[in-house]
Image 1: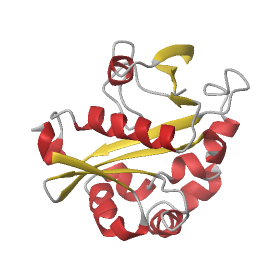
Image 2: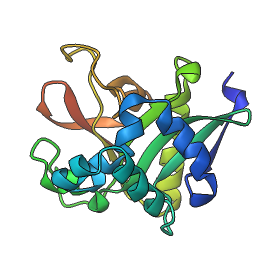
Image 3: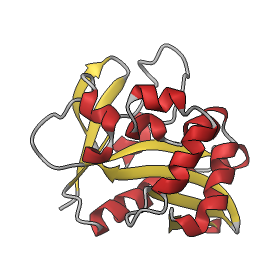
Image 4: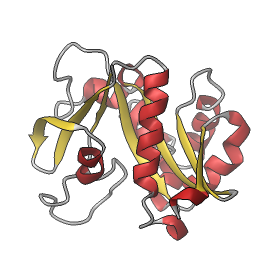
Length: 188
């Protein structure tokens, strides 16, 4: 099945397809990754249509905000990836505060449409996010996944699971919350 997946950069040309991925997910439908980019008050005020409008502006920017995966020609999944510096939430976070002075890129969100779950799509999206970050000069790539062995419940897996990052060569570099490590991959 993995050979039936293909990947493109998330740009305004693919907005309709990106929106179909977000719309298949209750939280994604209203969040649109604004959680990471906007101050909390703006994110909450925009919940729903406001965040949708904000995201439409985001994908028109010169640097795509992520990767869009397809199964054959059907939109199947999303992975958000960008320089850490653009994420307001990370600038303010104590649990995910920088671990050092290195300029890093961050992978912050995965959404896989229901028909395409449990087929390895998150792993493939991660692989293409790493390639995109490397191709855009990232020295280091960071993520904030859920450690399912330590999580109280299944919860929201939007940031990805620890296992997919470890399997892709990321290493844990900090853990300030029991179930949410910071993992990194050197891209040089």
